[in-house]
Amino acid sequence: MSLSLSLVICTYNNAPLLARCLNAIANQTLDVALDWQVLVVNNNCTDDTEAVVSQYQSCIDHLAIVNESVQGLTPARVCGVKQTQTDWIAFIDDDCLIAPNWVAEAAKFAQSHPHCGAFGGRVILSWETAPPPFVEQFHYSFAEQEGGAEAKIIQCLVGAGIVINRHALIETGWIDQPLLEDRIGKRLVSGGDVELALRLGAKRPLWYAPTCQLHHIIPSHRLSSGYLMQINHALGTSKLYGDSMLWANSYQQWWFASLREGIQQFQILTFEGMKALLGNQSKTVVVIKAYFWWGWLQGIWKLWMMDATQRQAILGSAIPKESQ
Image (cartoon, rainbow, N blue to C red):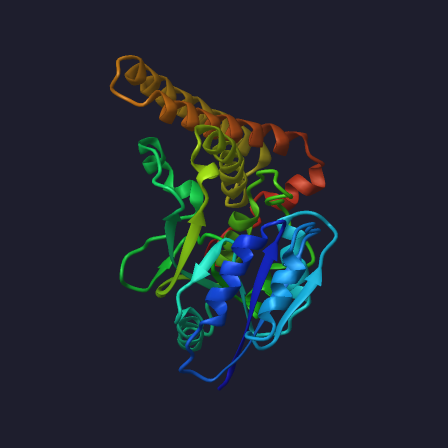
């Protein structure tokens, strides 16, 4: 049975890296029967994005571009899903370079795992310049995904290179009601990737597919302590939301459990801070971890302050099917 796959690339003012992303797609080698297309979602770009896409339309069959005026990665992704009809949808970030056999390997994995919710492969960090030592503790901040050489079921997936079963996505209700925001323009917001993976995983298994390999380009400006503080603050809030989506008890119990965990995290941070004062730990690392904790606490505050209906939609929304 022939498969159909859409590669959806949501982009905002990142034309140089988008060109590299499309060049990697243009150099795919296919050894399987596949009906596939590439869709770029222009999320209010003011740079050369349209010219870049036009340049590659001559060497990538079925490459198209659509516009999404609502700023943000989540509405851009929803637009990409609604503008395609294929059985499988892959979200390829505009700063990712897929391996020459990525499309073929994705098709093979989808063929052999037709009932999974989604799958994703190796995400290898490709540094524009050598990272400073403190960055080594924060590879997760750049969506690294390394699960070894064997395919296996896992609990969550990063958004870079995630391949989604359209039927499973429809089952989640995400297309009509996404719950969390993600990157908005240049503002570092996190949560959309976690929501997608957890809601899909609540319906069907998520798989790690090591043969689907891509490189995530990390520009030099993302290697500063300031950037890592910002992104870890966002990731802390995202972690709180993800935990809340898996919460099976009452709102009151969630509140006390979250506060208790916040206190435990603060105690760990205090211990690490003391180690830093004694010279046994990097002060920069401790500060970045503190930003993650602060983002997590702010997630509690945001969830508490939001409309009760919206909060209720988030709490428990990704409890695995067998637990319901």
